[in-house]
Length: 378
Image: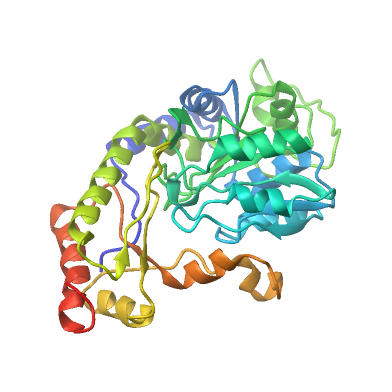
């Protein structure tokens, strides 16, 4: 079975891990510090703070932005972490509709959803496609509302030739196993604000004034102070070692994903029942996923996905709107585009180590579906 996602790992990651094992520093240490510096330089921000996940990164970033209560604007088509972070900070998620093509936050609807209670805006770069950051930032600036970029799907994605994660007050990245930069887990917060970086460094270590590595660098210093209520959310050197090797080849892996997406686009352009992903002129996507939209008035999504499965191909739906989950149920979220489009989404396999035969297998299965359904075109 061809999976939806698969990390591309090799000798480089093993070499870095061996170095970490030899130092004995497997918690937060020098490798994390080195990776933070390299990732900040890559994204184009002065500061980057490593965390144990993107989820905790989002939560701590909202804490730094002093979001306690009020409302946080989020898109409904996202992984639950985006909303969880707001709720953990006692805020109410307000769902902003999405662009029907890119599935990113719609700036026009954002402007309508902002109220006097709005404490933050979290645009999600869906599938690795950057949001329309100029419009979002202009709206936020006019209302003096901070912007926290959810970059869980990006890493090497560009908006007008600048990296995602370098536009908002902070950007939060994921290094989960299925992401473009896959380290098993882990996250990162990027920022231009030195004070934010300092606060995040303390928050991730339970509010301590010094973490273990800082106390150990010049001979062990036992003394530290707890200055705030923090989290146990720091990155460790094992994760950092894998992530650093991944960072070195991230651009080439992203280029491979773009090439595969182009091959899909070319193969599917004659299928009038399936829409391929749209890439705006301002965007260079990292292609975390390949989200097609099918014509559900003509075919059954479940039937199509079952056809793919029977041909040895995994498929998925990213995402069912957050407000449809029992815990986050909202009866009238006022997001008609998201409500309609999510029912059409089908993800196809896309990962940088896909072989030519695997790519062709996916293409043949998709185009072959038309041949067994007489009501749709080949």
